[in-house]
Image (cartoon, rainbow, N blue to C red):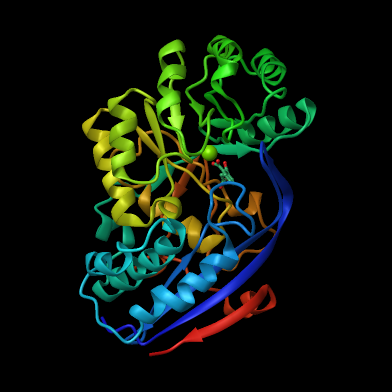
Length: 368
Ligand code: OSB
Ligand code: MG
């Protein structure tokens, strides 16, 4: 396929409920959106970096410059026969996996559309719907219990509570008192350290399916000490950048579960490699989220159809996040299952261009 041009947008959607985690509060979901155009087809993807480097190092302003000045000029005007041909263009640059991912993901959409295949078929997925749970941001115990009640009523298959130091044991006590049997996990987003080992060990009382990313975003090694001291499985998110990290983490028993975010790890090739190495170690994976709008949500759903995504992911209904989405197709889960969108080939959702214009703060075209 010849890539004839690229559209680079910045889109900002208000969140229905502000999303609070241990190290950030989001009131709007702001993201770069890339459209690769070629031979009458469009491949689309959302990038997952934030405005400021609070979850990981990348930022929207730096990514926009890297995309505009470095990556897109090397792609626009060229032909690519498969996503693997992008690798030599993306690989030389250090880091910037979220910026690389948006290019690679948009190309997977374009490529699978050119083949007339759903993205999940191009990836080798095996399901028509994926199991999903909810991720509940930090709030008072009462508000959190209400949100769990809503998620239970909606049939979600797992509840993940965001925690932070000092907002953990009491929250879990109250949650288990009310819901002794639900599938429950926590996500610390790096808020603890090895000095908190005694506190972390108390989490074993709550029958959690796993504890997500207790220690630093750039640590794997110390997580092995936490895992050795706990009965509960550790799940790594921030600190898994690629398949080599996944191999090291599983080899040294720093985790027993991995959260794969295609937008975090540099794209589908890397996501699939992490999926495969985890399967080789017998470690289940699940598909994380970054509060994506409909385009990113669709990419995540297709990814989660791969066989080793055996734990419920974070891709809950778009209507939990946004009053109105930038895609025409509703992405709604029922009974804890999110159907794979299939309105046409590729990601199976289409942009609502009229609405998108009203929520776009920046637009540029990259031409050969
Ligand atoms: O750590 O998984 C995370 C949202 C923003 C930043 C980091 C994370 C999250 C979530 C939300 O947990 C998942 C979602 O609902 O998309
Ligand atoms: Mg996480």
